[in-house]
View (cartoon, rainbow, N blue to C red):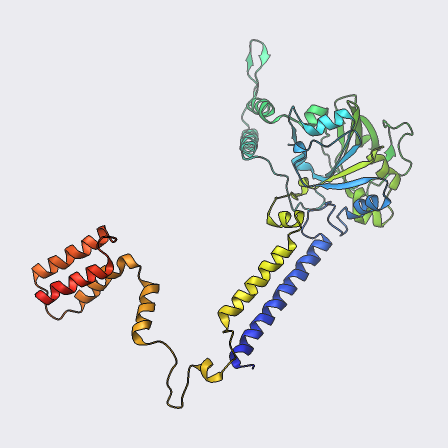
Length: 438
């Protein structure tokens, strides 16, 4: 029988179902579109994602494609058949990318793997910045302070004469800090591998980007014929002759490659050519295949975009196929909530309203049992006697004799000190006896 109370509860349940379903659909749509992920993440299917290249390689079946959601330095399974792709690494953060002496990534490259890093040249805003340890962040903040102080002194026109010791140039504060950071966290990637960025001068980007020309490469077949137009304004400066300028804008390299042990590494100043938008307009498949080299395992690193495995409860449920337990718990909570909101007996409108007769008698407990239930919910057993005595004393119309009051206080104190020996019933009986004898 649908009573007004049942109708209200049913409406609340339906409203909850609609809200949960709507929230799930919105969240699912955001995940499908990839809007929750930074630019150039392989989970994004919008123009600035890289899901197209990931899914294309996956569907071909020639490559073993996977996403990495663990710290790269903690992986031991990177071998000579692996191409490690770091697509869309923020350029500003790349300048501070450090490589420890025992780097697992460089160990894999030295054994034959291929490391590919494409940079996001700040043409699109970054949603996520690669994280560093708290200790390293302190050092970076100290270096920022030193640079700001040097700039302030330069603007103030203070002389910056370098001091010398025994005929040698004295190490500056920034150089000392960089040396100590290298000892603690490893050298910068750019320093260890031997390149840097050329000084950025004024530029005017052509519509569609700069035209590129081929250079040199480690591949026997040479540089791919089809090369992308370049959108990034940054150029490389090669300090180690092992680097080869693969793609150039004019005479300035924008894609470089070098041998590292038995493997190789590639760095580019742009990432647009791997984006979904670029591939939608045609792209340069030959150049993309050149990036992979001859490797058969392709790993898209997502940790640089903030995606990592947390090892939470949902992961354990999926791993151990415990979906039934999760569903059973959900059903149990629904039944428990229903039981708390409604009796499991046939409905009766008069009982629902608490009226059993025309005279208006109300169904419920006796005054004594109701009072006891209230006390059980409101007062702890150890505080029952002291609380009752306190309330009783407050209601006395005449003062209690000092001797009797002292005896009652001692009985209450004995009860509080040893409630097992002086129980509630015994203490109550003793207090009543003292009051009868006064």
